[in-house]
Length: 176
Image (cartoon, rainbow, N blue to C red; front, top):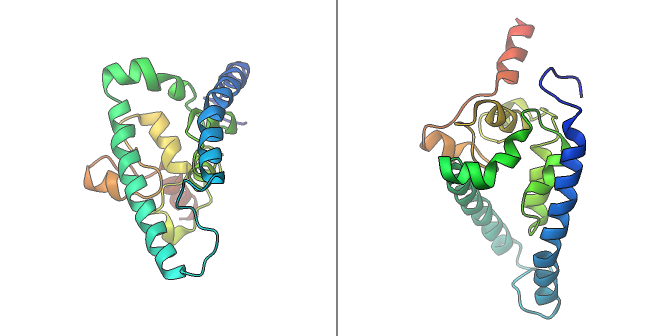
């Protein structure tokens, strides 16, 4: 990775933490899978009720985004940050080895978690004001007090913690 803040020395540290967290996350994931396998879930087997599925999916995204915003913001409280969240902020520049610092219960959430840590800032221009992408999350790691949410910018805008990513404004400067 070509960035002045990227430290190669931290790669081994990231690999170690990643493997520890994979082990830690596997047990609850296996339990949830077994419960689902034995019929104890409301997962969809088909899409025959597509409208209902879409309503529930949108509701899921909205509430997940809200909960993650408040949980993430809470993790930045001095005590919680020091004891729980600081390890995630060891890396100022995003890379894929950070992904396993998150909960892997939901495929979509896990996919999104990968996408906001991949260092790829390619969000469609018209979606940049509303979608939380890697650029937003990268700025969160650089400035700490902004861009807490998972999917959308809504909660940061409502709570006055939104910060427009520097990479987007730099692109505008280069175009002009």
